[in-house]
Length: 143
Image (cartoon, rainbow, N blue to C red; front, side, top):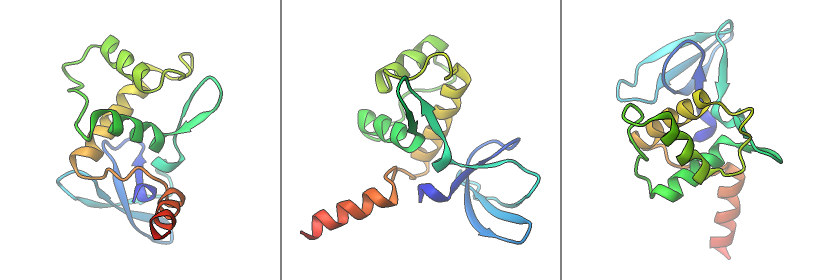
């Protein structure tokens, strides 16, 4: 499911990829509105699966960061972004990803990541495992 979620530059929120046309995508909002709309070739579209966080040694996929937050919080939203100070946001991120690259990951990145995480958890998209990980787990369960 995570592989079909994307962000569209200039539009707030996250979207599910519903279908593809010749020169466009049809997307549906992840939020309660479930509003569908076309996204054209000239719009910048990024799949969440393609986003990673810089660390001191490597890039960690966003899905892994979300999985760490989900595991740490037990599926509960960490905190209200509007009520939190920038220092609190950074402190919390340091507990989740202590090895993140402080020169290349900015506060705006952290805020956007929390917004996306909160949106996904609020609307029940909490399967942050890759298809490969899911297949491996299924094989282990079969044995």
